[in-house]
Each structure stands twice: as C-alpha cells, then as structure tokens.
Length: 124
Image (cartoon, rainbow, N blue to C red; front, side):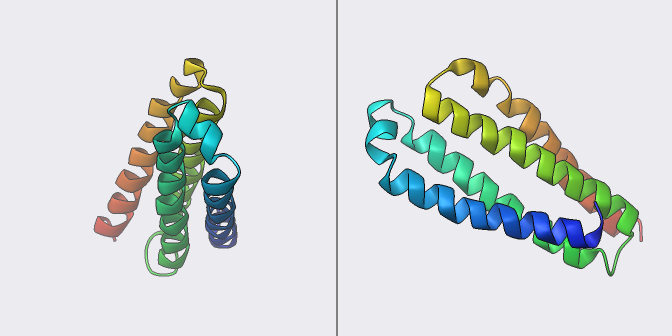
C-alpha cells in the first residue's frame, strides 16, 4: 500500500474502532456479558486501535525509510487487523468458535508487519 492508502487505512481503522467500541459498550454490552464475550470484544477493539496507530506511523515513516518495505508492513498490518480483530468480533457476537480459529493467522500477519517495519528501519 502506498503512503496515502496507508494513512487512510489507519484513520479508517481508528474511526471504526471508536464506533465499534462505543457500540459494544452500549448497545451490545448486555449480550456480550451474557455470552461471556465482553473481554473478547474489548480485545478486538484494543488491537484494532494499536494497529490503526501503527498504520498511521508507518505511513509517516514512508517519507524517511525504504517505502517499499513499509508498504509491505502496512499491508500486513491491515490484513492482520482485519483477520485478528474481525475474527474476534465475529466470535464475540456469534459465540461460534470457528471464527476464533482465524485469530492466530491475523496475529502472525501483525507480527510480520512489525518485523518488516523493523527491517525497513535497520536496513536503511
């Protein structure tokens, strides 16, 4: 992803993180609590926010470091967040464990994003 798309993705994840966090805290709180999935939902929101900020920082770093590597990092952050947080949202809302099986793949993509970001900074 180029710098502009990376920054747009970061801002979008941040916006959706606020919206989903508020929706979960108000409209879904009783349902999530009854299903024992409030912490799962909150974890999804938290990681979404962490990686919204990671995307914003990555976009800004593209001006200073090797943009090609950081483009890969941003793609890994975005895909990882969609899989990690997305699967946790679905698991929290449906209580179907099949969705939770996708979460580790998202986590691996997030780790990959951080590793590629580190590589971009040390290889300059």
